[in-house]
Length: 68
Image 1 (cartoon, rainbow, N blue to C red):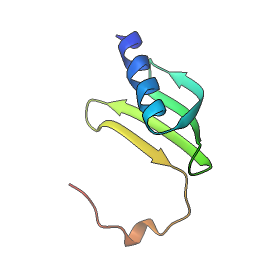
Image 2 (image 1 turned 90 degrees about the vertical axis):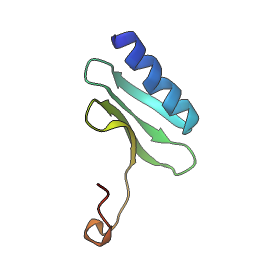
Image 3 (image 1 turned 120 degrees about the vertical axis):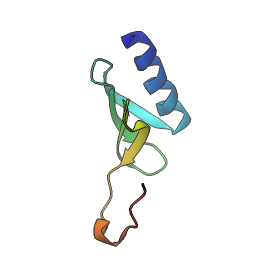
Image 4 (image 1 turned 90 degrees about the horizontal axis):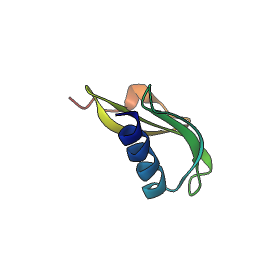
């Protein structure tokens, strides 16, 4: 199962132009750097949230509308 998770994380990194620094398939996490945005990026997969890509940024998270 870890091989499938790692493969999925790596495919997502490639699709989002993220240079990979570390992959922890057991935890379902990939850490890297977005090439187009020139910022840190994290990809994670979980049963509850599915596959998500997060980028480091400065922002006012209180201003965002929640998604349910």
